[in-house]
Image 1 (tube, protein in one colour):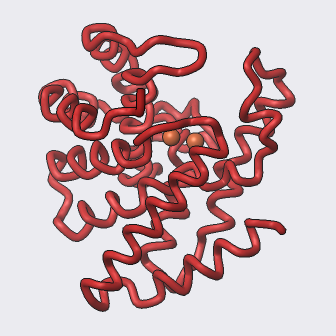
Image 2 (spheres, protein in one colour):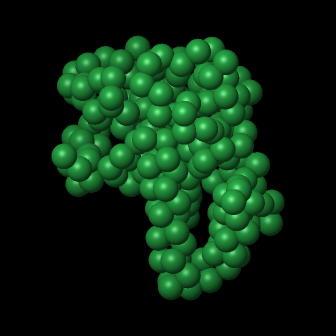
Length: 223
Ligand SMILES: [Fe+2]
Ligand SMILES: [Fe+2]
């Protein structure tokens, strides 16, 4: 079965009446997290990564002055940032050694794939999720992928999730690395200020590092 043909129909159904009522909203949230968990399990990322990325993105958005509607919306769509990885072979995603440049090119397609799975111009929520899937590896200075977008050409949701995603990866354990200590994370983010990430967002995160660390404590990875 090709999951790519099944997910869009189901997700569209669930999101069809976005914000219609509370019950719908809670079903949507559950579905988004379930999909996010599924894809991160497929890509060998474990634990509560998608929950933390959602919470970091929401807090960043709030502190950056987004309106409450957008703050809620970014929290809902952030867990789907890597949905396109369902189209990337497990042999590549689960590879322990370094990727070849051909394999790396395949991995990069998870962005455009996620966008084409999720895009639904008549559904505000899904459409925004599609943008996040497409743009979460773009860099503020234009050196990211897949399109090399620059600065505010990148949707604010893409900029928020990009920082949240990397912040979480740095502070977490991976097959190839231990969690970085706070000081090392902060100096990395400072070094990428205006390069990989929007300067203002790096400033917000570093100023409020305690609140972001608290989110990690709330959603730890299983031991
Ligand atoms: Fe990604
Ligand atoms: Fe991620």
